Amino acid sequence: MKKLKINDIVYINSGKDKGKTGKVLSVKSDKILVESINKMKKHIKPSKINPQGGIVDKELAIDISNVVVVCPSCNRPTRVGFKKTGENVSRICKRCKEVITYETARQSK
Image 1 (cartoon, rainbow, N blue to C red):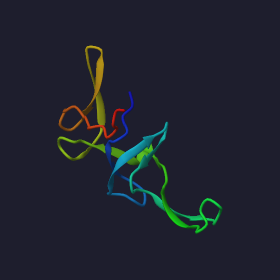
Image 2: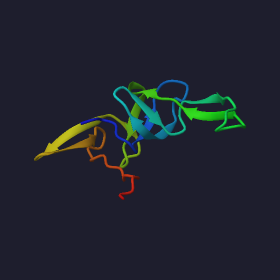
Image 3: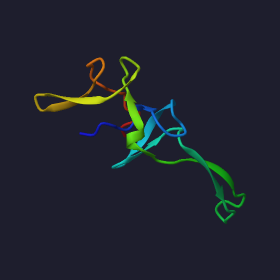
Image 4: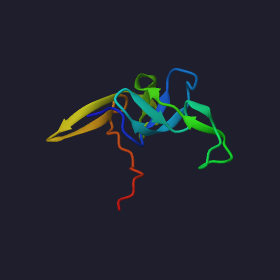
């Protein structure tokens, strides 16, 4: 089981965006994409599809070691532990020992 999941709220603990929080948009093996964190400006050349061209703000991936999960019950950055109950494994907050759950934003079709 992974410590970070999509829609988790994370705290950035190092880098240029240190101290900010954001929502996880995607998770890869060692990098994550966080909403409105680690932005860059990308210059787009004019083309047939985009005749205007222009400058676009784009979020870049950040290393997984630079973020910490924010517990939804105590609202503080915390380490993640695992607790096995029967066949289910759930993530728990190391500070308050509560289960970490977030509402999923995905809509079922």
